[in-house]
Length: 310
Image (cartoon, rainbow, N blue to C red; front, side):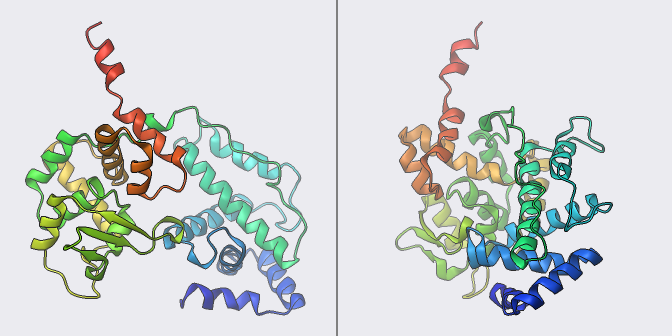
């Protein structure tokens, strides 16, 4: 295990000749552990997020590397056929794919992981080939605002009515503060200032920190919840929070659509009140204003009212 920088040092400390030989051996043996270790070292050294890459991103990339290795079982990893990468992505996009079609976002994650693997192999000097150099995923035909619709306020209230204290915090940290589920689960008491009605996300997406203003209802829930310094407030991992929300939705008769739509609900409600995308972007920690534009689509009830009596 160890820290990211400690794991990365395993490869970057090698002399160039040893780096090349070890990477070539791992590719020849199709060693998933060593090839992921090499890819992780490249990501944390040359990737956009550097050593601040999130554990969730690393987990997704590791799964993607193992999946592309399984698909590449019949080819030489160091001398792949020219069009193999394009064929791999088109297979993922196939609407008749078994057991089920893959979403456009999942295809992009798989492609990013595969590119990272071959980038790492090129960095090591083991190959000059890149089967994904000219490969681009097909454009997603479904607009962003049509996917993973936010929980409606009436649904959120129905869930809050029956929620236990920890479940209430999961709902309010997502539905009011707009935190991602990993950010909620990482929150410790030292990150919260009830006097200032703020909390601090220390390691958000891309390793970015941000300050979030709290609603009175969330402040009250935090005030009533038992907390110990240095210990995560929720005390569960993201998959545990997802399970809790799924169970709550089942009891309340609310359609479950994962935890992220809680964050969407926060952004949508804020835009409905302010009509200001910059305010939404600051609240949710969006670096690009365009990312927040989807909340304007979700909050736009004018079209719905215009056609409802047709």
